[in-house]
Image (cartoon, rainbow, N blue to C red; front, side, top):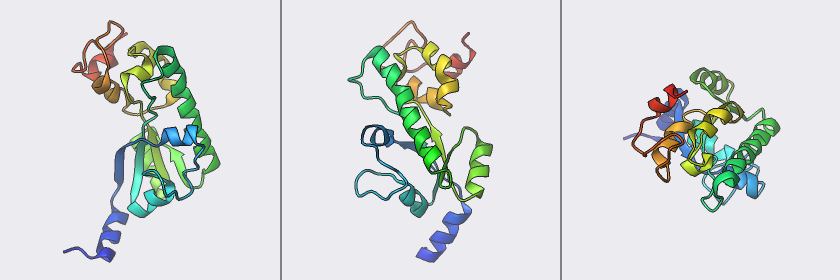
Length: 172
């Protein structure tokens, strides 16, 4: 049996990761400030701290009713919304792109936030779009989600959801 004080001690010694958080739409569309505790939604910075989550992966998901190029344009809007959060709350949350970033940021007591890309439609089912915008999005592990979520066969990159991302990484 674990007592609450033992669990809190254990959580402080561990690096907790949540590998998929769908909250970015709330930041963009509703202008929610994740530094405040909200009684709606699943995630905010106070609850991340209370739950001992050090490295959340935020998924800038674009709803499927945004077709093609509209979805591609929406992705940087979501990225910009998160950057605004990072800029406004530098003392609480920071964008991480590497494991070293996570270690450095967590040591300061801040949340180390990764951004991912979710859904093939987000890049118009075209890996060239992902390659061209990777520098802008500064995402980690994003392409793995795209490979899993590819919405239709395409000649633009992934031809089936089962193709591995390693094939993406060697494409020219």
